[in-house]
Length: 157
Image 1 (tube, rainbow, N blue to C red):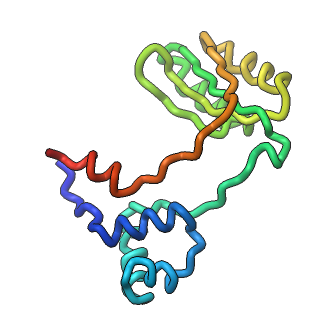
Image 2 (cartoon, helix red, strand yellow):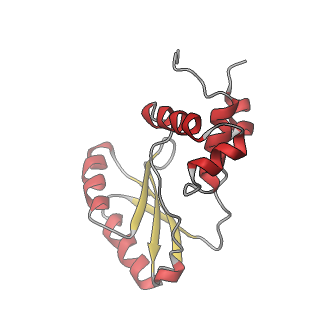
Image 3 (tube, rainbow, N blue to C red):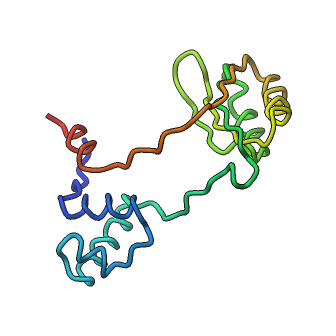
């Protein structure tokens, strides 16, 4: 049973606003949610200390950097290959996400490459660990923020 306190409505307002724009000044964030800047700052600090806010970052357009092809690569392997796979993935900068999953596959990878030839090289490199299934991403929709709608549905009945 999780005994950590759940975020209250003001915390959720902060989380939603920071996911929209993490660079918003705390004074502006406070005005939006109806708190003073010091009170807002204290709430943000507590959310960080509790690990709810794990960090801040920039959204990068990979295509603008010459990485216009994205693929989802699934790998089915055996248990003895799990650690060697993870080590190999860590050596390959084009693999930007690694998810170990249950079910038919063992790993789901997100790959960014400049050309189909580079994707082929990645598939060939990890294919020695087992069966590979590759799907080229045609278009991605923006990620949905974690906010009050999701949290309300995640609450225990």
